[in-house]
Each structure stands twice: as structure tokens, then as C-alpha cells.
Image 1 (cartoon, protein in one colour):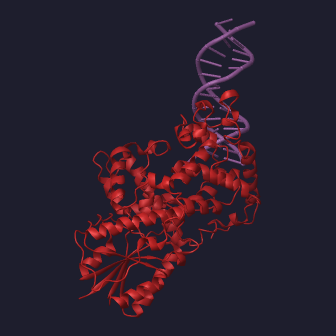
Image 2 (cartoon, protein in one colour):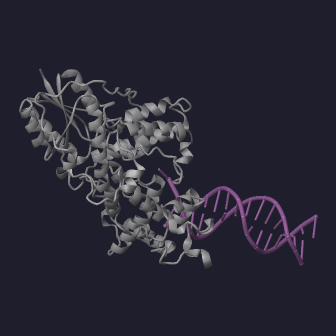
Length: 480
DNA sequence: TGAAATGTTGGGGCG
DNA sequence: ACGCCCCAACATTTC
């Protein structure tokens, strides 16, 4: 009689779960475990919106497991201690988990693996959450990639991506007696105040919802993805990011479902464009794995001395609350606040404004996204912000400064997105919808209804370029 | 996965 | 018929 612990982390699914699959094939008794070990992941323990999602997702997973006659065991505390207690409590022989790649997590997991093996426990980790391991993909000089396109080409030279594993239809029972479990409520993941109604209305966490979201995307939006993905008022993107972050769906499942779409084969331009976004996710994890300091430090070292604005609390607050006076920005920031998510096109626009026009450090934007996004992911968030700030891998050149008016007119031409999130501008004619400060007479929104712009676009753009020039004259570009 | 400044072209109005 | 100007539309350069 042998017992294995399956340690769930951010792989909150039954389908295509290699650790679960191996454990149920090799052992007669299973303990299905989740440990709330957020404290040891500081400063990148999950933010408020992520904790809400995690709570919901754990609830779904526990239900799905209960349907198979098993139970999800919940623990709280340092992971190594929890595992040790459980191993001795149920005489477990093995611990299995699926790998994660955040620096603090890889370090901790390595330690746990060593310690448990030293005490004679079998430990195995599995690839489940990435298509390609960060260490598998190497440049010609066998270093990590820092540019996306050659990285993605190298990935595509790798072997075919295996088909996802089916969900088990039955599971080995728990040991007898089964281990104690905390109640989900006791983890304290749900916010004390009821601010999450908008998020709850916008999302349905869990593995089943992830599968139907994917199917709906493939049926309705995939064919027109290349254009549709840039229109924030339209359902043109997959909205799979939170499901992928928490592992409610695996990238392999997405890869194969998109590749098999009857109308849109793998090499159809629409499928390639979408799968390329999965590629960016891979790239973000690759970069974070090889450059573990990047959540706090620019990859390009010369940006450490960038002349950020000194006192920016008020401007930062205006940006966070969606009170900058630029409709596309404010609409995005309110979509984020209300639903825990923001359309990717708009993420780029709000990031550009914060970093370039307001000259507020990108780490402040990253911190706000970390706390408010339901898909907050250290790899993706870090790459995205460093890309926007121009200091990261394959970054946008610093002089690439988005003009929120132009971007609004280009990607939200009728103002549908702005009107949806800024009801105070609902009556404003389309002509002024992206520049209400130019409206005159009755259609002009009074300043107590909608604020005037917090910066002058032309002037702040010039200042940003000036700041960049001050970097250029610095000693040789020391990238690290 | 930019924007603005500057340069070029070509059609139409008009003396 | 012609040259001139205006300016939109596009292309190129620069940041």
C-alpha cells in the first residue's frame, strides 16, 4: 500500500495535470493538497483580486474532486512544514507537483525537494504550466534569449507539443484516516469588504469555465483575432489569462484546441497570431527565470538612473482611480478596478501614459496591476511593464510614446468602450469622446463631472524624450 | 504592438 | 493653356 501527496499550486485542474496523473497511476492512496503559503512568497504574494479568484477556484476544484469521491485538503503555513507533517501523518511515500517558475518559488521548491528526498521521500516535479521549459530554449551561444522573435522561432523548432492528458474519471481513495483540512473560509482569501461584486459578475473561475471560455473564443472570435484583439469594446480576445495563471487550463490544451479548430488550422494567420500570444507568455517565463531580479530592477541597467518624477503621489492616485482626464486611460483603469481585468491594447496605453507622460516609475504601475488584476502573473506583469518602460527584454524603444487621443480614435472610434466605463461621458458627441477638454458649450462635461487632463500631452512627451536623452549620454550601455 | 515633424506628390481651383 | 497656390494624402525621417 503506497500513498502519494499531490501538491496543487497554480495548476487548479484535473485535466492535463501530469502530477495528478502520475500519482494516480503509481499509488493506491492519494492526498490531494493545497497549501496557502502566501507569506513565504513575499513581496509577491497574491494581491487582493488574485486572492478572490483563488478562493473561487479552490472551491470549484474541491467540488470537482468531491465528485470523484475524493477530497481536497487545505493547509496554511510554510510549505515544507506542512508537507513534513502530512508525510508523517499519513505515512506518505511520495510527493508530486507541477513546476512553477517564479524566482522565490523555484528556490523554495528546490529546497523542499532536497529536504524531503534527504528524509527518504520520493519527490517528482512535472512540466505542466509551460509549453517549453525556460532552460530548454537556448541561443546559439547557449544563453537565454532577450528578443522575442528568435526565441519563438527556436521554440517552434522543438519537438511537437504532446496532446493534453484527459481528466481522470476516478481517483484512488485517501488514506484512512484522512488528514485534517482547514475550511476554505479559514484561509481568509475573500476580502472582508464586499468590493468584489463587479469581479464576481464579470468572471466565473474554475476549470469548467476555462474550457467553455476557450471553446467560445474559438467559435466566435478566433477567426477575426488579428483585428478583433485590438478593439477593447469587442469580445475579440480570449480572456484566458486568469485561467492560465491559476492553471485552470493548461497551455497545451489551448495550443491543441486552437490548432484543431475546424475553420482555422494551426498555420492560419489568425491561429498563428493567437498562438504567438501564448509564445509571449512562454517568453515572459523564460526571461524571468533567467533574469530573476527583473520584477524590481530594469533588465537594461542604464535605466536604473532614469530621472523619474520626484513627487508623484497625486498623479499616481489620479491614474489608479481613472481620473486622469484622458477617456481611454480612465475607462481602462475603471475596467480594471471593477472587473479585475483590462484589455491588452488598453494596458499598453495606460502603461505608456504612466511611465512616459507622467514619468512615474514602472514599478508603481506593476504594483497596482499586481494588486488589482485577477490575472496578475509575475512573469507576464514584469515583462509587460519593462516592455512599456523601454527597459526590458525586446522592449518598445523609449521614444515610442502612445498618444491616448490617437489611440482612442484608432481603436475605439465610436467611443463605445469609453462610454461603457465612463457613464459621465455617455452623452458626449463622438467627435469629442477622446478629447472632452476641447468640447465647448452644452456638450462640454463640467470639471466636477469629468476632470481636465492631468498633464499636457505635447509638453510631457517632450519632457520624456528629454529624460531619455539624459540617459543616452551615460557611460557605455551595460546590459546585464 | 507610435507620434510628430518634415518632405513629396498630385489634383483642382483660379487668375 | 498655363503657372501658381493650396492642401490633402501619403512617404520619410526623427525622436
